[in-house]
Length: 192
Figure 1 (cartoon, helix red, strand yellow):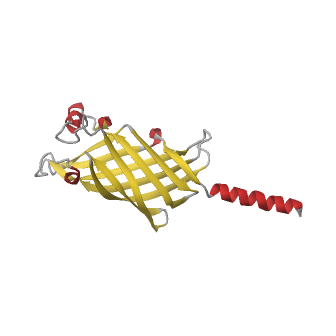
Figure 2: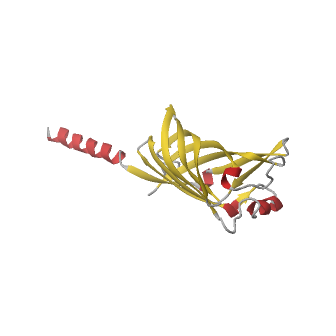
Figure 3: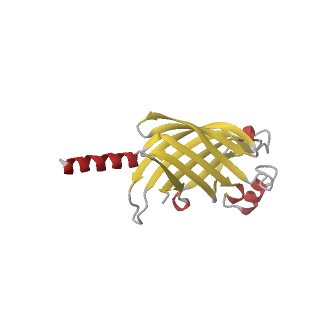
């Protein structure tokens, strides 16, 4: 009976420990923040941000408890063309000298179906904050990535109107489209 009671207590403790909120940090070596925008109405320019920080707080694997918080260094924009990147950092677009960060703070999350969610949060670009909804896919969790780290993975996609955030170069939208598609592939490592 004593062994059974010890086993029950240990099991209860393990379940309680697993139900606690855990903090995860984005793994930049396995994450990508990319965007795509139509150019001249005939093709697309793709780019990414190379420097960012992000945290996730989540209870167990219950994604509906997730809290995402993200910050992106605007100066790390990278389209593969140095002159274009410089123009994007200028006051015509992001005005990186004045507004060096893009931030996202989650406000809600709702399950749509298995491993698919609606992630809503406040996106701030050029000091303009708007609510944005992402389609979020939960890729799952592993307990050991080969280096002893626990990891979880997500993919989030959305489309925004850059004019909503004061990124209003080419007001006609003929050379540079108004709509920007965003795809974020994130891998998080459990904080130790």
